[in-house]
Structure formats: structure tokens, C-alpha cells
Image (cartoon, rainbow, N blue to C red):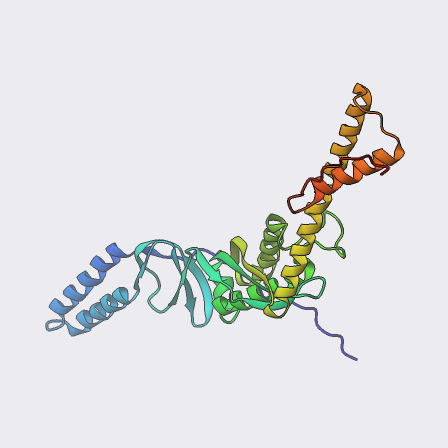
Length: 294
């Protein structure tokens, strides 16, 4: 029984290509062609090779803009990358594949996914990225731009399942949510994108959530829930403040001996004060011409 051969790392790393400044090579190529043309009539065996050499010299010229590189391959074998700028020259037989090293923006489409609690949400992100290794970008993946788009979408989908959209009873107090912990979520998204882009030789410069909302089918329900939670929170603070004010009022009346209140009068005063302080409408005063016992 044959044993399987161990897996090999087929990752190719970028290396510097043997290239030259193109301007001297332009002069050399033109000079060879001119000399060969002058000798082609008197000494064709010498002039013709010089013309061919001049043409081959000029064929090795290529142009690189700032933040652009060229990966060179010779008969299918990688021989290096040139990161120079301007007019460059390399082996005329080598194929030059240009790669942009500029920063790029990826505006991911709005995705409909489920968050950690299973609620359908809409989420999107903006990713800033650039090519770090030209060889990995060209030869490690089939199409590095399509690879970045697909992996970014997969990372955003996975991120949404790791966090809840917002705080609720089912989420632990202080837990990170998509809406409340944007900085932490952005760091997690960037780390996952960097791990996914590593095979393509791409660096993630920045990643931020650009769109976050409940899916339309539950948006109205969740909005009413958020409004109810806000009302409950506000009412809780109002009641807490009213109790403290009533307690302070009773304590002040007792200490200054302005009026002596028995249990029934104290209960009536507490009830009246709480109604006045906690009501969301203007209260109408009632003048009592008798006593509390009539």
C-alpha cells in the first residue's frame, strides 16, 4: 500500500527582477539599428545581426507608473518583479504583467444575513486594500480582484453571525453588539479580512461597517420594541426621581415640624405627589375645604 506524499507549499514569494533604466537602453537600441543599417549594404552579415540586436533591445522596454509593479515571467517561470518607475528595460523575451500597488476601495454590496440571535439584518462594509506581494496576487489565486470581493462578502457574513444587532434581554450586559461596539467590530472585521486575503498577497488598510439595519420584514417590529424600551427606561428614571423628591419633602416637613402627619395623611401626600411628578400630563389641583377624614 503506497503512502500519500507529503503536501508541499506551492506559495511563490516576490523577488526583485533584474531590470535596468530604460533610457540608456533606448540609446543603445537606436545606435545598434543605425550602425547595422549603415553596414547592411557593404557587410550584410554584420549589419543584419546588429539591426536584429537593436530591435530586440527596444523590445525589452516597458513603462511603469508610480505605485505600479511588473511581474516578469520567462517561458512560464517567474524571474522577479520590478517596482521601479518610468521607462524600464528587462529581458526582451520576458512577459511583463503589470499590477497596481495603489490603495483601492471595495464597497461591498448590502447583504441580508442573520445576526447572532437569528434576526434578519442588512449589513455592508467598505474595505480599503492594496496589493502587497505581486507574485501571490498574480499566481497564487486565479483573479485577485474577484478573490477580494468574494472573500470580503464571506467575511462580512461570518462577522454578522458572531454578534447581536443590538442589546436585548438575550444578550449579556456589556456584550459587544454590531450597533454599539462599532470599533471592536471593525477591528474584528479587519483581522478576518487580513487572514482571508493573505493567500492573495493583499493587505487590509481599513474596514468599517457602512450600512447596518434590520431587514424590512422585522424593521417596524424592532422599532416599536426599541421605542418601548426607551419609554420604560425613561419612566424608570422618572419614578426613581419622584420617589427621591417625595422622600426629601417628607423628611423636610418632619424635621421643620411644619405639619404632623399620621400614616393616613402621609400615604395621601405620597400618592398626590407621585401623581403630580410621574404624570405625563398637566395635573389639575383640587382644593380641599374639609379634612382628609370628611
